[in-house]
Length: 290
Ligand SMILES: Cc1cc2nc3c(=O)[nH]c(=O)nc-3n(C[C@H](O)[C@H](O)[C@H](O)COP(=O)(O)OP(=O)(O)OC[C@H]3O[C@@H](n4cnc5c(N)ncnc54)[C@H](O)[C@@H]3O)c2cc1C
Image (cartoon, rainbow, N blue to C red; front, side, top):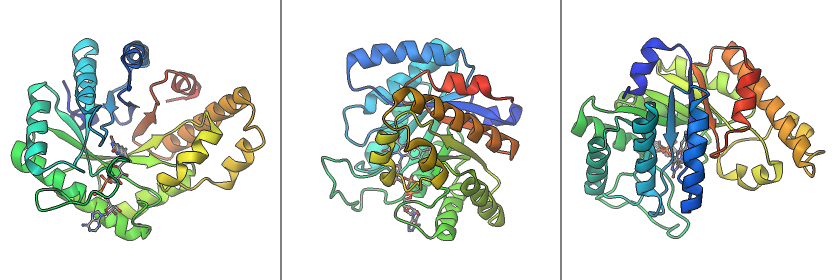
């Protein structure tokens, strides 16, 4: 199965879909169907998130392995180092490798809700760049490694230039590409590219896209992402927030326009936060010309 950097050699722009492991067996069965339908949209790769809470961790690898074996499509296993010792991370990476998975998104993660005060000790990694370096040290070039990028700065690092330097460090340690946090103002993404260009970061920065389908739901979690809601988003969605159909349609239109502008401006592809749904991604892609 191709590593993501190998896909880059033949594709100027990639299409990728992010999934999360469902909590129930029924959710898992539904996801199998969703993945099959998402494959009809011909993504270059999928990715699947990794929870710091424990229960869903094996499911991440099951889903990634299943996508590769059943659909012959590359898939990236997210891996967070929070709450894991170095030895545990080593075993998980060996398991990932043994399953035939060769793509990892190396993340720090955040302490889980049931252990919010967790702090790293001597046996733990503090930052994701240490995880990236560890993977390269132990496994050489076996894995394609992606990392997270934050066009509006990470929530703990509002100094945008400092945050960009931390990102450069992840690349220096061996990461191949970047997938961004969701954002709704394309200018923040283009400004981010400029900051990274000034630091001579040449790795691809794939924009992460979240179609707005539930405005009230978005308001509840947006503050945890460090993403600013631009006034134009508020103006579109606030007046129609009690009308699910209008919100859904406006979400499609907004995301399609956002994607079109990103691609026209040189973005090296699109990474959709699908929330395990076929729509709205399918309708958005149908509107795009690329
Ligand atoms: C595309 C994407 C996918 C994600 N997938 C998941 C997932 O599957 N599971 C999950 O739990 N979470 C996931 N997250 C969330 C992510 O784990 C959190 O945002 C987390 O808080 C930061 O992770 P990171 O890998 O960017 O951390 P890091 O790169 O370690 O950065 C964390 C903070 O430390 C700062 N920092 C970095 N290096 C240094 C340094 N040398 N000195 C001082 N400060 C430094 C950074 O600026 C930042 O503020 C994802 C985020 C994105 C954008």
